[in-house]
Image 1 (spheres, helix red, strand yellow):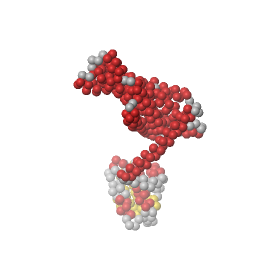
Image 2 (spheres, helix red, strand yellow):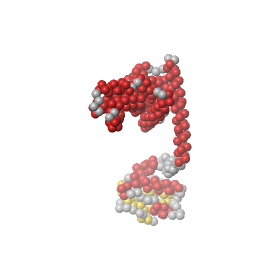
Image 3 (cartoon, one colour):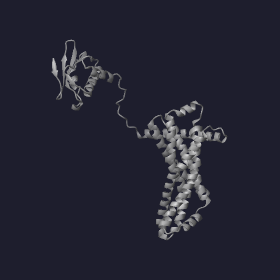
Image 4 (spheres, one colour):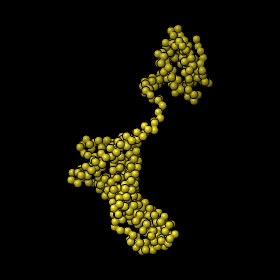
Length: 382
C-alpha cells in the first residue's frame, strides 16, 4: 500500500508496508536545503502504535540531493534506534549511505546539547576567591625563585649568556628612547599648560618651572616611563616566554638541567631594573624641556629665568625619590612580564592573553606601589 506523504514542489516521500513487516520508505524528487528541512513527524504517524520490525528505502526516483536528505535520514534512523527498529541502508545511493554511516559512526557526546546553566553569584565570588588565592601562591613562589636566582648571581653561580643580557639592555634602554622622549615631552607640556592656566590668574607664571620640575622628578617621570615600559617591554617579555612555553623550549631547558629562572628570567629582570632608572632620569630632563617650551613660548618667560627657577626648586633628593620609584617599578614590570610568560598555556591565544595580563598586572602594581611609596616618603619627610 502506498501512502503519499508531505512534500514540497520537487521532493516526495511515500511509505509501503510489505508482508514481512518491513516498511519501505520511498524517496523521490529533488532534495534541496533551500526548500527547508523535512520533518519526520509523518514517519512517526505512519508507524503508529505497531512499529515495523525493519525499515528499508527505495530511491529509484531520487534525482538530486544535498545535506537536507542526510538530516532527514539521520533523524529517521535515530528515531528507529529508540524503538529498536533495524534500518537497512542498501536501498540508498552509495554516497548517501557512506555519508550517513560517517555521520553516525561517532556517538554524540553525552550532555553535548545541555543548556548552559546560570552560575549563582556566590559561586562566582567563591571561584574568583580561589583563583586569586592560587594566583597569589604562584606569584609568591615565582618571587621566591627569582630571589634564589639573584642570590646565585651574587655568588657567581647563575647560568645565563652574557650576550643575552647586553642585547636585552639595548632593547630595554637605547631602543626605548624614542617613545620615552615623546611621552615625557608631552607630559611636561601638559603639566606646564595646566599649571599656567591657574598661575596666570595670580601673575605667578614663573612657578610653572617649579610645578613641572618637581612633578617630573618625583612622580611623572618614573610613572610614565614605567607604564610605557610595561606596555612595550613587559608585554614583549610575556610574549617571548609564552611562545617558548608553547614551543616546549622551556621544557627542553629543564630537561638539559638548565634553570629557566636563571637562563631566561634573570637577564630580563636585570636589564629592566638597570635601565628603568636611567630612562626615568632621561624622562625627567625631557619633561622639564617640554615644560620649558610652554613657559618660554606662551608665558613670556626667558630661557634663563626658567632654568634658574627650575634649578632653585629642584634638589638632589627630588631626583633620588623618583629614581627609587623607578627601580621598584622596573622590578614589578619585569616580574609581571616574566611571570605571565612562564604561566602561559600551550596555544596561540594563550600567548596573547599572557601579554595582556602582563600589561594589566604591571600597571596595577605600578599604581599601587607608587601610592605606598608616596605615603612612605611623606612619613619620613623625604
